[in-house]
Image 1 (cartoon, helix red, strand yellow):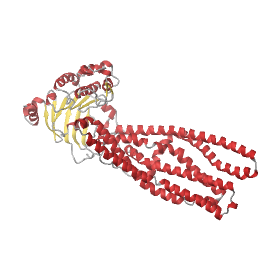
Image 2 (tube, one colour):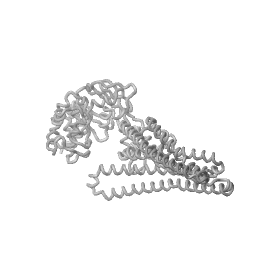
Image 3 (cartoon, helix red, strand yellow):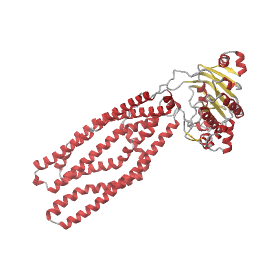
Amino acid sequence: MPVNTFREDEDQKQVVKRQTIIRLFRYMVQYQKQVAGVLGIMAVTTAISLLNPLIIERAVDVHVANGDWKRLLLLGAGAVVLNLILMLGIKMRIRMMAQVTNLVLQEIREELYAHIQELGFDFFDSRPTGKILSRIVSDVNALRDVLDSAVITLLPEFCVVISVMVIMLIKNTALAFSAILILPLLLVGVYVVQILAHKKWQIVRKKSSNMNAFVHENLSGIRVVQSFCAEEEEEETYHQLVAEHMQAFANAIYCSDAFQPFIQLSWGIGTCLLYLIGIRYLGAEQVGVGTFLAFSTYLGMFWNPIQRLGEFYNKIITNLAGAERIFEILDIPSDITDKAQAEEMPPVQGEVTFDHVSFAYANAPEVQVLRDVSFTVKPGQTIALVGPTGAGKSTIVNLVSRFYDVTEGSVRIDGRDVRDVTLHSLRSQMGVMIQENFLFTGTVRDNILYGNPEATEEEMIQASKAVHAHEYIMKLPDGYDTKISERGGSLSAGQRQLIAFARAMLSMPAILVLDEATASIDTHTELLVQQGIEGLLKGRTSFVVAHRLSTIRKADCIFVIDDGMIKEAGSHAQLMEQQGAYYRLYQAQFTV
């Protein structure tokens, strides 16, 4: 199965930027009332900002020219009131839009997290956890400026540009054309720059993802790093990753910074053309001082929004790579989903049938992990699976819980194909215990009750006693309320395994899967656990994957798995009598 690591950039399919932008802003549709309110305030503030140059023109050409100081003061007072309203409106607009942006980001983050929770194991097997975290956290955060500026910058500034252009054309067509004559050159320059910048920012996102993946992996394995005194090597690797990210970021910044020179140059040329045409060709006497002042102000109002639009466009190019990475994950279909007509699984009796099952991972279809496996397990039976590493033992129990779908054949429980029932109704009736069990940050109680949040205190204690975890737990500083980290804190590997075992037992599953569940428990504790679980296994179909053959001698049937097939099957006594593969494994393990 191809696996992406922190040492290599992720592959990313190329999509049309316009489609990504449209898809992103569709999230704002449900907040149309709030957005409409922002747009209403925007209309008022834009109108006031467009009135200011006209107020200046009238003040100079009419009231100052005629010496009408009284009306000039009234006009000034009105302008102050209008601009106070303008300032208040801008603050309200920014605050309201910030609320909408946070709601949209929350929705995207929750949708992304929920979708990732539904993806099959293939998705997690093929990429580091750190790279997944990068998409949920940093890539989503990168959208804040885009969404926020879309309404409070893009729409108002665009409206200002259009309005100013119309006003200038009405007042003096020649001056208006002189001011905007350079605009086509700007558009061509911006178009060229954005193509280059977008590719650069995609690389930045990938390099950032590589860093996150390395840090997550390094911190998760910090005990190994320190045990082998590999701190310097790890620091050197991180230094290289940081250097790659810094170089990619610098390249992207160099490219993005080209926006502003294009805008500043166009603004300067436009200003020169305005005065050149206005004074030299039209004649200063044909254009009033107030008109010139108004046009100068409008010219600033024309190019300032264009500059801010350029900055906004730059933000889009900078952060669009994050949106593309988010939507790429959202577009990954889950391989393991409920059918449209899937039914609820009734209470499981425990009969499990493998009917000519073959399996290969989707990313490596040429490698057959299981080949034409068939068997039937009756309700209440305990089945042990033994064999060399990589033989297919864990794959069999993963197919029972439908963590993967078979390539050929079918897996049936009580006569129902596991693909025809809902995942929740199937898995909620199963208990799964693996060798490297994960403990969540919280208390011991929280971790055990994770198997059944509705369980009572008495039920939790009974489950713990059944696997001999209660004695260990009560010796902890706060008993069941002792806080632990995801790595188990000061708990030994065996103690962590016992807590996870109690968690599985508390769920009272109809089918129990123990995949190397006692590997981390010492021999003495293992004997106690074996005694405790014998009663719990009664009446439940159980699959036990084990390397310690002493733990499965009482199994109803033992499957010897090798090369993806069942080589031998029978009870411990029957297989020992055959003196085949199981006999040789047993003799090798117990003969000194």
